Image (cartoon, rainbow, N blue to C red; front, top):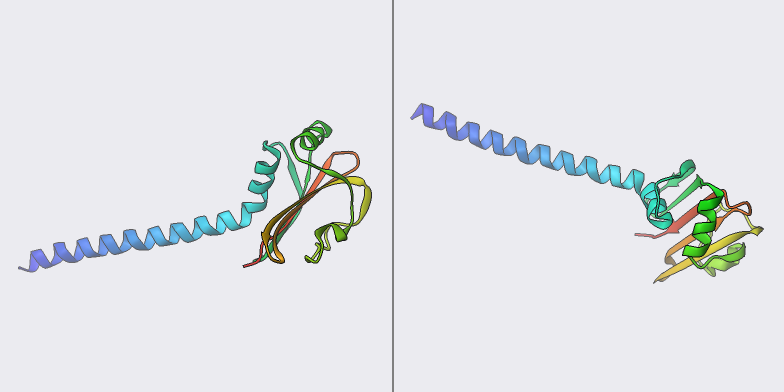
Length: 141
């Protein structure tokens, strides 16, 4: 009888340990996704992983990333997305503009409103020389 109790207890402990390690693994994976979401978003926006992050900020309701790219990639982005000349904070309307992206007249702007009230928009600004891309998303909770 004592030997059966030990086998049952061992099985319960093994199952509990596997569940605990699974939960810890999911938490670590969730944190990884949160930390590296801007890089993944840039990769999806550009269609390539060939970029170098030069600045990044990420919070619970928005993220900002600045990447260095080649001018060929900049030209490809202009063909791929509907960029418009110049950027001013008024482009985002009543939404909160990012203080990270300065006003510029020679750059290119792509703005995507995802229709969730004041939240839910993506702003991309490509520099005049097409070698620097800044992305900002205000997604809210």
